[in-house]
Image (cartoon, rainbow, N blue to C red; front, side):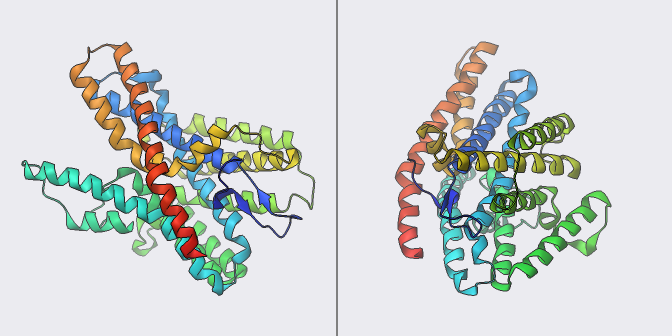
Length: 363
């Protein structure tokens, strides 16, 4: 069995015993690989002007949407029974902090050291506000991306964790009210164009609706013993929604997709998670190979650390190898493999020991 991470193991009141879901780990790994492939192809295109995979590599961006839905499911799955129990707040905060920040601090410091070297050689001077926002996942006043660019998604995660903490302190009824108000603000901002008196963009970003879909999928999973769920219908609905989301997705828009796209993709990925969870429980064993669960364990290291490795490999290849389409594909594949090895080592020798130490401290 793979390492029993908090991310797919939880005691649920609706089930007769502790529930174990390796599917969540596998999905985290798949989402990270999607983002990795996307960046490998994107950096290759920027460096060489060669468009790989006919431009369809942009669909790897959907790994971010999958991550947000998974986060909603996972937090509800692991901490849903703690809602309304303030005594659990310290443990919740400790686990969330150690899951996100130590590796973020390390990689941000490495990237800043690299930028400092460039600055000493005549590059742009460091921006203090950007550095602070990068370390603490705060929105930058000037709208700049964090030092580790992929960490922009962690700002959404930190916001979601904060709102869930309020729900944990105040109970399910308050949680439902907070979620309703949050979704109302997002819909009003993105569909109606309402100003909302200057609410920060982070709060009203369309991506945030996907956390709610993850929570809804978890609630349905918890209720699976109360009414029959036909997996064939769940599979058909999931396929229809995801195909619709892919059709509506505009590669030119990047992360700036309409709310409609986020709603369709969020619902589709939620159905996929629900389908896999129920299917795995009916099998009474993990249907996934060990290596796929390993990718899930290492997914945070892969997601946060891959871009520096991929960019370095692609840049070196563009400089020293022949300019041909075959070489560009080779460079993209090579950058993915090297990034997997490097980030796997980062997980094995840095992230995993830190998590093991933190669990002893948190408990």
